[in-house]
Amino acid sequence: MQLEHFSLDEFKCKHCGKVLMKEEFLSMLDKARDLADVPFVITSGYRCEKHNRNVGGTPNSSHIKGYAADIATRNSADRFKIVFGLIMAGFRRIGIGEDFVHVDNDPEKPSGVVWTYYKKKK
Image 1 (tube, rainbow, N blue to C red):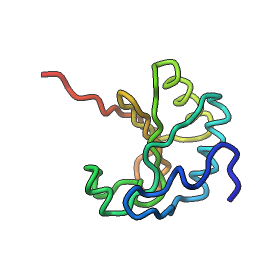
Image 2: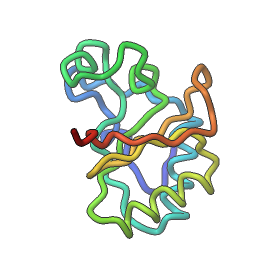
Image 3: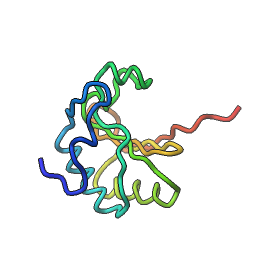
Image 4: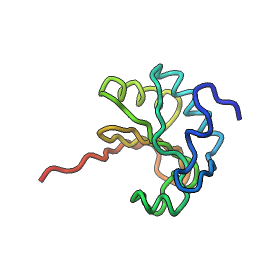
């Protein structure tokens, strides 16, 4: 698969080194990167089940199935551009953290949702 903005190495599991990403996901992400016009630094792509457990991922994580990536964000302006690009490219599942954006297109999960990873203040 030929990608304009990414190499497959960016998506490999940090534990086993495998890259079992879905082509449709990668194609959409490449389009989103083009639309956002800011760099997408992938901090997590494919995860084997062991690595997913080690990082505290949910047992049904879309990363395990190759449908997800986490993208580093440096500031609010870049975060906005990244989210805009993702939505314009057709993504309908986006999670927003303090320093990253999670995106997936897992067909087994609800679509048209945005959530945050911010810790609730007590």
